[in-house]
Image 1 (tube, rainbow over the protein chains, first blue to last red):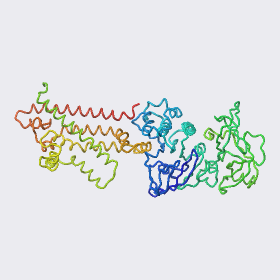
Image 2 (image 1 turned 135 degrees about the vertical axis):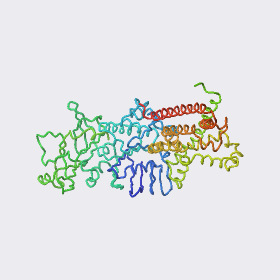
Image 3 (image 1 turned 90 degrees about the vertical axis):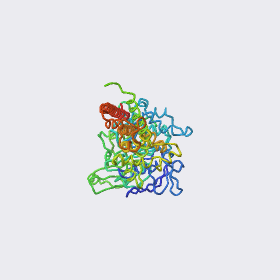
Length: 362
Length: 231
């Protein structure tokens, strides 16, 4: 349970954030300069808001009205910084144990052994931070924060300084620790794939204001938020269940209320929940069921709304059963096909447009 | 050149003792002052900064005279210390150590402060979020990371103490066996007819001592730095 309602001024930047959620993973999304790090700093207690409150699991960390301001060392908020910030003069092991030793045994619930196993740190414990790669450093930083026995974990763009293969790797680790340790996570990012893959609830920040708070599928699919969720990133998220694997062709079928999706093999068991992200530009529309096409996914859809009808492209919202999809077509196609609201169409999605980063455990 | 005489060994040991004691007692104070100057902002900070640096720019004789006025047997601090703690600086080797500590203090503070300034303060923030108190953050993060500067500062001050002359001779005079350190002894021999060869022997000793101190300083600094990025 995270309950934040704060107002904080730094120079002429005003941050006003208000959200409350029970979600295990909260995504904090926004462009750079939107106030994401300011918000995270306030939750960690590094900076002090001028009014409001911050509560985690019914523990008040800050409340201006009640004059509560728990110092950072007593907040038990694990803060993983963008650039890891490992202590350079200590071994990896000493880094991992730094916070652990400062917590009374009674409040410990995360064991070093499990953290080392889950994050794959065994081979690193004797090394010095200066000799680690970026991804290794980030893993140690996450382990260090976990071992300080946090009631909340803050991950501030943990992938920002990593190359693409490392990012996928760290994302896998974050998913594992979410499932293993049951620590609520606030995940800060300006990347839509990361947020949609990990978060259940998303908070969209822009210029210090909370624009939207809600389920990741709803919020990321909303057309009115598209200027903030990004032009190239526009898309939607579908909650699915693995229905079957086609081992011969290395494909996986995902079922959702509204149809089935065929995607490149997903590393999940049948019946497990998987989240699939579909980019708006990967969806084509047809008014008749097409024949003789290579596209594997042909979904029955209905047009719900149009947006942004001035430029060369038009985004439209589709209802596919209960799911909502955003499709992007040229304005010429919209006119030529005479698309209108409430019209039944076929949504075509190439299976290859799903990649490893767009499918992941829900 | 023959081996050192008993008298020369006495002078050498006294010099080393004065320098060592001056560094040991001034180092904690210098770390504290450097930390306060690097990390806090308060009214009168510029004044404190200037005061710390004063021995660097003042004629050493003036520092010695100020010490004599303050810490002399009848001086305000000197009489108080004598009365309450039985500590006497005037015309004792401890006074020579005090003079050396004051003269070396700015060098020490500067080196340590540079080192503290170079520390990424977010490392300290990270330590706090992990549950460390301010004192523990200082002891476990700030202090070890400032170690190269602390080593450099201590050695600079030590070397400065071995060469201290003006403030020492003004404050505690030149008493053989008590306050006559290496530079003072050399000065004495140059004032005596026929003392040139003695002065030369001691001068060579001073050169050897300085070179050893410099080499040790280089070695220790490299070691302290290397601790962070040793592969």
